[in-house]
Image 1 (cartoon, one colour):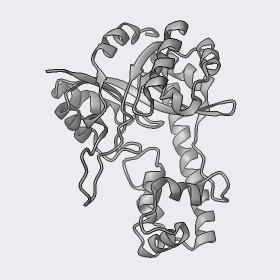
Image 2: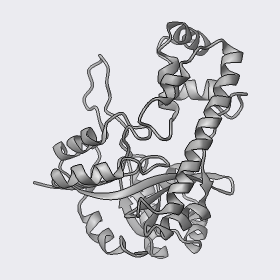
Image 3: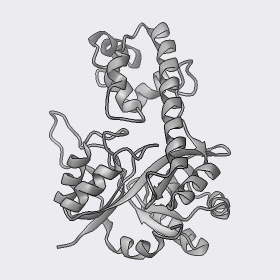
Image 4: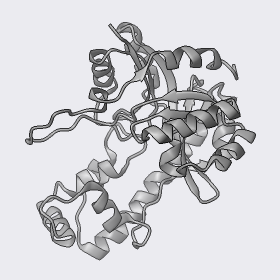
Length: 295
């Protein structure tokens, strides 16, 4: 039986829909032998994931996905095999969480004034998530039938698209604009390394297309690797970034960016990333010797 890895997954501790136990249970069903829990800007679920993974005979690599910025680019940085109890890392992530809550509250105050939407903020923030995302906000907005009716009216559709809702009410051109809360990438690289971890740029083609020169600059300030095997990438993206990784001596990783299974009444052929996208175990074999670089 073939076995696979997934080094980019999310749980209820950020924007994922599954508990840590459910996530690892799904991974086991799909022959995932090595998994990293990389919740957005938090390591809250990692200890639980390691414990359950040990019980289920799945290797769990402690991880995190930190939102960052580098000049005009918004980039996601994955940290692997880091010390989740590192005081500097914990302090930085806690600060990001507080900033996120403050920004959400300010954004919702503007949105409610503009649109008349109602939203139960106590319920919104009373979840396991340490970094509430748009999935939480929009899910809470749609619980009100009046809100939902207005969203359908504003977007002129009976089935409003998740990303259209974000752009309509929270996009860069709106007064309720809600950007990601992140760190300068140099700071995030330093935090990951000081916590003993390996720093890998997530799905580079999504944010950078083929801008090799940007990755070259990131390598010069400490970037260790690229997440090349990703459902966000076409074959030519993978080909380009594999060649780049080889030239720059960067490690190669892969992950599904798993958030949730599809749900609904409509029949579907597949309902989760693992049913069409899996990362070969061989990727872990070449990565494993590098996981202790900073320890």
